[in-house]
Image 1 (cartoon, chains in turn cyan, green):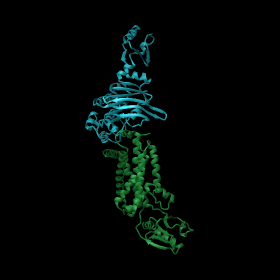
Image 2: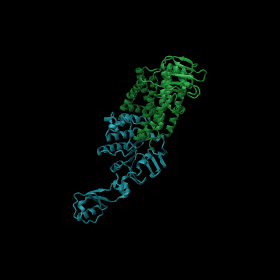
Image 3: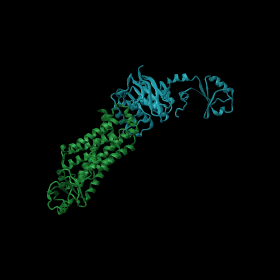
Image 4: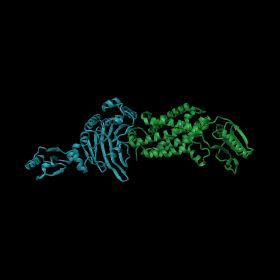
Length: 292
Length: 336
């Protein structure tokens, strides 16, 4: 597959902070890269440099082997964390406005249908619900039938149903062969949509790989969860991690762990066993809760 | 061009649907104009005004009549301009101290002129009268061009400057930066949209005032349109310069007021600058409103042609080019 984006030793230094400090990666056509990191890790600055909105202090960004230029603007789409639009314009008028800014475009009716905007085309965009607004912003990001789309925390603030609806739209975008760069605070979203994950902290990429390979590389155990009250006052020969009103037991030998719990006389009625997740990996690598 | 027209259309739709802006532009400003014109017409200036030709100091030692109390004496630059003002009764008398004996011009129809003549002749019986005639220029005729120019200035400065700062603050400019739209296309679209609105609204205001007050219009309407267009462009360009980088509406508001108020005071909107200190007049010549106003009044009141107002039009063009060049150089889509 062709390389769409090559990023080499990208840096953005402000007088008092190194927002991005030597990020390098390559992104192949049709893949979705999930960019994860705690607040202040440098995700947004990185994505803004990739979008061509912020000038890097140093480093190189190549789109299909060439520096970012006017052609790049024609070929990329973007959805910010908070995208502002022009006041008093309806959904249709906003789409028409952005449609007119590009040389190559998708037919508006196709876009409207794909993003399910039919029911509120003549509504002022300021009167849309959160989910409707994000669908409009995605439609605007796709108006030029882009090769590469940047989605910066597109589902933040949406209710679970609206979030799932949005995921379906992004899956459809991926199915068209469009390359996607996604930042998100939702691990489920990253796991579901991303072919590759890059975890950032302190302006650097500290882990990169497919979700499965990253988990396999860092974990060989599973998590057994029990209510904390079940454990209290008992001596159990297992590594226990107390988390609020529950206790987590990390073990590579689940059968052995279960035997020890039964031997200790615990009720396992409320036991949960789960594999390691991206959230576990994130916390292990960054030492921070995702929404901290 | 497709991108430019799309941006112009979007901006026009925004203004057309913003009821507060519409009310402001369509109702408040014309009502203010008509109200002020009527009020000032009803209470003309009470101090008599005399233009003086010649380099001698304007004091009683030079010529006794110059010591007359309650009369404002000012130095007139050319006899032609002074005589025109006497004809219109925008001044009450013109005195030429360069000749011996002194000469003076007064309008036969001016009561104040005849009174001043009595005072003058009492001190210098040899002074020679040069009677002229002409219809008195109403204060409303003189004021309305000023108010039209004032409206053009305020609409141009605030409509564009504030809007760009608001777009930048909200992040809309950042979103546009991510498209193929070039800065010159965006700025051009804002300029065109504002120009259309300002010219249309000013034309509507002119028509309304003319219907109510019967304005004096000696010149060509196309020349007046050209003055309004170039004047508006210079103000818009100035506004773009102010808004080139600012991301705070409070700061831009302050800066725009800082520009608007000196122009309001120094450019002769409400009162003529005849007789003002030369420093003030020199400062006024640096302001686009002065040139727009001088050219507009010349067309409306004197019937001036393009050649007559060419210096003012060239000044407006030069200011527009300068402000646009600086604004384009300084322009940023986002906050640094």
